[in-house]
Amino acid sequence: DAGVIQSPRHEVTEMGQEVTLRCKPISGHDYLFWYRQTMMRGLELLIYFNNNVPIDDSGMPEDRFSAKMPNASFSTLKIQPSEPRDSAVYFCASSFNTDRARSPLHFGNGTRLTVT
Amino acid sequence: AQKITQTQPGMFVQEKEAVTLDCTYDTSDPSYGLFWYKQPSSGEMIFLIYQGSYDQQNATEGRYSLNFQKARKSANLVISASQLGDSAMYFCAMRDKNTGNQFYFGTGTSLTVIP
Image (cartoon, rainbow over all chains, first blue to last red; front, top):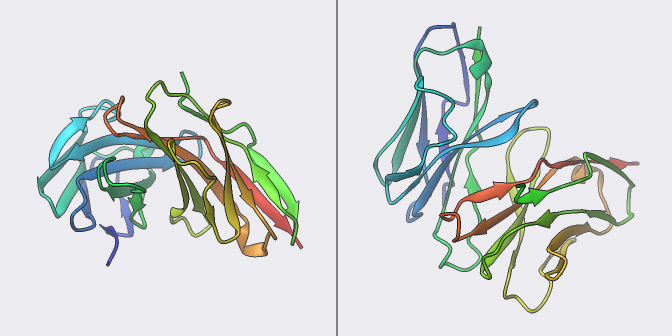
């Protein structure tokens, strides 16, 4: 199993530019989560999907952030326009539903975003 | 209210000694899962161990074990025979159906293993 695949691993961009982060979840997983991690705020849930449908996006900071999951094997997190305060590590993670015993959350390696 | 509480921001342990990392949780769902993750300085999140709310025995995975006290709502991680490579951030997490199958994470504990 290839695990959760995120791209790019690192992104450096200038304030005001559009940033798109990509994620391929583990095949067969029903849930996909986007998290953001900073020293100040720790690990924050931004949005999660169940069977490609967004369930809770209350963690999305503002309208500059949007996420899509057009199919079971692909999701994007877009920031437009980006700001320096968006600098963080963004994790994508996937899992089976809770009816599958011992189903942990599997994380990708993260995208380190730097907005200058 | 906090779903997961980790009260130890930082811990130190001598190499080869055992260490316990504390985690308490809050849920009204009788069915839930508890998880521990390790995040080394390289940044990846590594799943370590799982405990189900109906499991009769404490979970163990190699040098990791989970001290599950259901009545106290605690799920402490015990690392035996600490190694230098155990130095990392450790996160406790919980998942329940009441809140839409989200995973709730604690703020983490930074463990440093001293040679």
